[in-house]
Length: 496
Image (cartoon, rainbow, N blue to C red; front, side, top):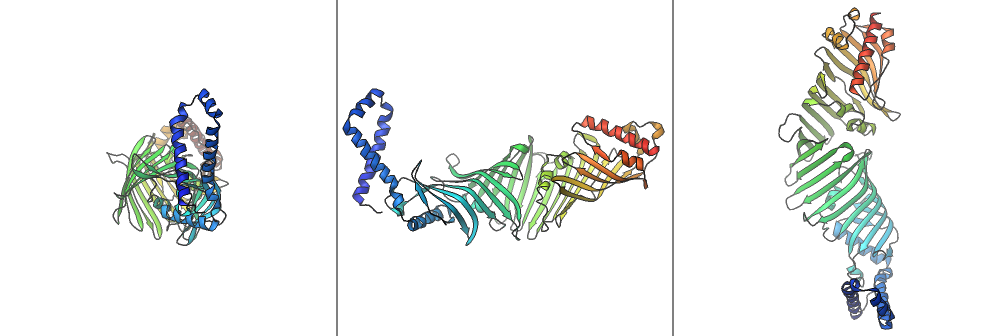
């Protein structure tokens, strides 16, 4: 495989000569000049000879022994990317469209454990020197249809790759998946990689990771820049389907890591300040960059996993939590929270409800424990006349549909306000203090099913028949008219 030094030198000179001639003269060629050159046998012979030598040079890697080239490529990958690749099948060489080796069924090992299975791996080579196997240089790597197995121990696998030198090298991953598993090897969630690339940004003078992904059926893109000298990590996330964009700067210099993120949701900007230690993540969330009116604060413990989140707001939109396309219902539908090792508590207090001035003092309490999700003791007030409280609630997925079921208790302090709002005829305005009922709300169908309706402790068959199915409209005005008519009809049935 090793050629005499003089031959190698001459061939390299010939290759350089061809490139120089082409650069100087190719654009100057006219058709008539080309005919003259083509009629010159000496030129044709020289061109064919040079072309043959060049192709012969490109074919040199086909003579490398599998054992030798496998060892050299593994060492090159380990040196450049600090990744321990394992080739289980033959390395096939091709020089079209550019010299590269291809293999199937390869893998990546970390701490002597297989963390990735790669269906197809391509290693593109530099043209610098094929005469010595020791000088083989990889300048591009491409993984296709790979499966990565990540846990809390190696979750930063992709970030660590950023620490390598990508000045003259690219590293790409296409059509692959990341399986995040817990300590019991159960899959928590799957992240689909459509296109991922590491490269060197000549403007930022830094390594960049850019990836287009999909998680829980939500497509998003992520850009990460590692400012290694300053020990800072910049990230930019875009989720166009949710009108969401975030920019984050994370300082990992000290033991307690500090970060700040700007969130743009539906053109509204908010801010998150956070800190991270070895076993916990703590944050404060504000609804604006300057005036901090809306505040969340939360803490996540990782060993054991436990999280709590508390929020206070002047005003919120209930659609962000219970709307059909809201993020939380979509996450619940994936059944990611059906994990008995997960414990999560959430409470949000809001004085006002956006776009509905009649509702106030909203308290949302949520708890995830032993794989069950409930919002017991959540409550809301209506026109200072009604307090509605939820009990025995459960959120679950049935036949692919998200369902909230439980029991509601409505305490009425001023029934006159209710009758005035509903424009109920005076002869039907009977005094009512308390209403209890069981319910099931189907998010996908916007359907509310009521049963076992008790008014002041008494069951009324006619009222139960009237209010059995409530279909919510998309238009607020339609809903108000529909609701008033339905309530008045039920009141008439109750009064008899």
